[in-house]
View (cartoon, one colour):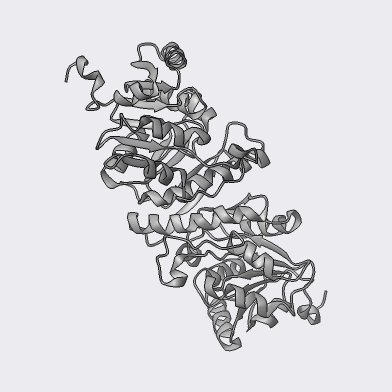
Length: 234
Length: 234
């Protein structure tokens, strides 16, 4: 495939929308560090380009570019939604014209009650059951929605000198889920866990609120993570 | 305090109601092994006595007795509810006359949809938010309800030759929460995590459904557990 195919989704680039927030740039940094092509998306192209330049400074030689969200979505087969929860629905709606059948859209949002001015240690109840299922209800048929990456500390993602030490529960349709699980080992300390159907996002998203409460009670600004014990060796 | 005080709640015995199920006898076995007095409760005294004898066989010299639920509740300051979820409300209602102010009632139930004939990898929505909060709504004023022990594999509890390897998120009123947290180190491999207010049981209970799904997908009959990473050393 030539460079002129960059506009197609048949490539191994990873788009990260909302790459100007907390978790987003952290994931982008780690994927870039692992040698993957990263496309930062933002509502304004200039902001995305700025984040891309910052990642390039931190990881010289990285393949990282910045575009407005729709253009970023056109440039990757796997698109990670890292926008604030309260912008999730509007962002997904705006992407409908460009999302294509078979494209993978990863929801990492959590409906923290902070979105309505209440605390980040509690969640809102969503009609669809979870942020990921809300996203699934909004995308065109054939777009594969996967839930992942909710429980990772942004601080730990950005600290390239240390492993992240967190399991990532990935749920959604099988082939898409496996494609996202395959991204986890790119980040030192992340381990993919097969989280089954998308509806399990209901549980995984809630865990983030619990972790935020633990961060506060135990005064761990770097952030807690989770590990599952008893996993068989592969 | 003399042995004749056994009927008072001012003692360090631990009562486990529903000690004839899965997790219950496992916890009882572990606490007995650690040298604590254990009182097994069941709807029928004979069943409780039978479990007590079995524990005594496994842990010779253990202090373990069996009684009908109400009598067991009278005999311990900390009472752990390990009845099937669908019997939780009726059991708690039956205990109202004997529960006393300051007594600690530990909810370890999970509203798995198996209770209504659906799967154990999904949960029911409860009006009060969680099994623990439902229990809280049913006890007399002054009884301290704590949520704990939901995520521990019964199989691993019963296997005295191995550590359990699981964190226990304990939530509820502070002093009672700390009393239950202090029980965790009695079981090798259990670590107490300060889970804050009782409402966090909503999240902790859901994690059990996720773990059951993982057990199935990964074919781990011994059961998964969880650990939090990033906890500061004490």
